[in-house]
Length: 198
View 1 (cartoon, helix red, strand yellow):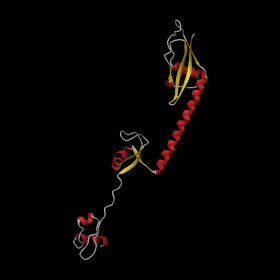
View 2 (cartoon, one colour):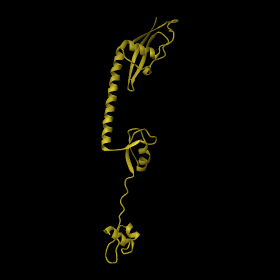
View 3 (cartoon, helix red, strand yellow):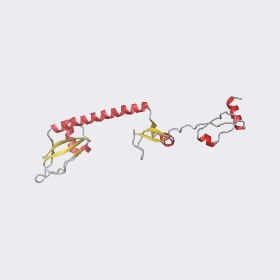
View 4 (cartoon, one colour):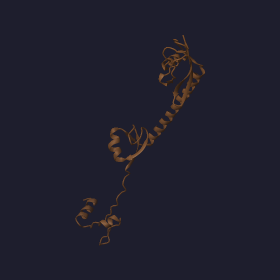
């Protein structure tokens, strides 16, 4: 028999006395009558029950995509991992996230600068002239819509603008009006619209 098997055989068949529960709990060695010490097993510390993860998609009551969260190991292992909703954090993954965040920030700055340059172009043009069929006095038939302004911008500046970013007052008379183009959440261009009758 191997030495471990011999020891276990002696332990279970009464050759070696077992430690009492009290001695095992106080982490003291069992004392034998013939001055030998028995085997004392110390419990290992419990493993960490939390995992640091990165969310791959928005999860209600937990967080949004790309956020770092600490969750219980079982929740990660049994729910988030099988559904592909999260990933364990690694140094390589943290580095990639940092690079991606920097790239996104640089892109946001570039888009904002382009919007500011476009706003300067729109504001220096002077005014966009719209012609409509005239009615009684200063009234015109119909009204001037954002699509009309988009078409004029396209014709004069050769720039494509989405009509959803154009904010026009209600134009039903001949005159000069101010329209706003929301080019970026932080950049708005004000342009003059000059309405005249045919």
